[in-house]
Length: 477
Image (tube, rainbow, N blue to C red):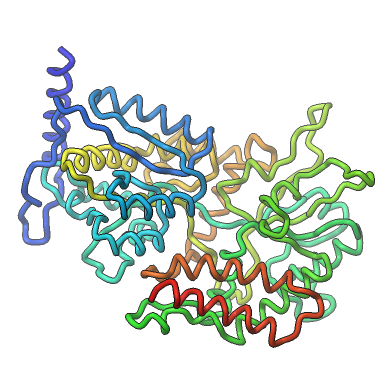
């Protein structure tokens, strides 16, 4: 009986796709070879991701729904760690021929995977006459997120689809700001002693008010470096054939902004995740005194919009919050060239020995990524931004967004709202073999530069840049 039900559902689903105008290849032909999942085949699809417990529960809920249609497809979802952990494990397993069918990814990760020739061009499925995406489904994706899948040199290839998106935002202690007459900064560097809307002015003023504080915490050193190069229009990387010409970050312009951040670090005005030894949200929300009876915390934290709930302090014994959290867009270097990094996972498919596994993997991806209900619940749980426009038209999501506030109950909605306000400013860096190495190296470079000995010479600081460049070249020779 179950086999019959599954077969009927599969046929109905396939028929619905055809009737709804499923797109074909550019020449009007189908991709060839049915990719409809065999309802009688026992199939396991391995999916690597980075979800924590709260998001994993949402995923598992929708796996249950998926299995009501496809009871014989087992989705073996595995939380590997961070994004770089997923990347490293996939690279290792590609070499051994044991790669997962689906993996969370960033563009520079996929650029590295492409060397294996095991990344599936998703057009093979998107344009299929039986299981592909309709024109309406493609248009439902937010265009900028969807087009990320084509940024690998050959725009006729589609290697990723957006899963959910995030960016960086600036969290600040709204209570402290209001009590001390501080303005929310909108640019990095002070143009004069009284430039009170610059981050530089604000963190110095915070240090004057509370000398034991570390006013600013920035989670991702790599993001900070890369974002500054975009905002300042200074060289970072480029996708070219010659390895030595791919890495452009070793230049004086980039040293100049690192010098400014170094001065902040030496003065105790800032820290980063690597320097602090953990996410700086922990410093931002800290209300516990150290052994000397001093509560050391920050008043500004720049981090992922998807981590909004971690930026809200725990309630006090009386049920109130120690302080109110504000959220704003990150500071800019040039208001005429506003840039903020586009992040959040996409997914790619990696070739399996059994074609049925590939087909089942696509069926699952399509089930999740064309579902506004899944996107809404995922966003409402985390602060990630939905990748489907239809999600924003759902009554439940509209109600969620209307409840945006600075308490833990509404901070995820507020974070998502800020993300959408800066949609036109999003950027992604060029993806090529070695771009992931560049990201790793500039993150380490920034940490080494700002935390170098106070008496470090100019030559020693320049060498940090040169060494980072040399490592990128060596790793990609």
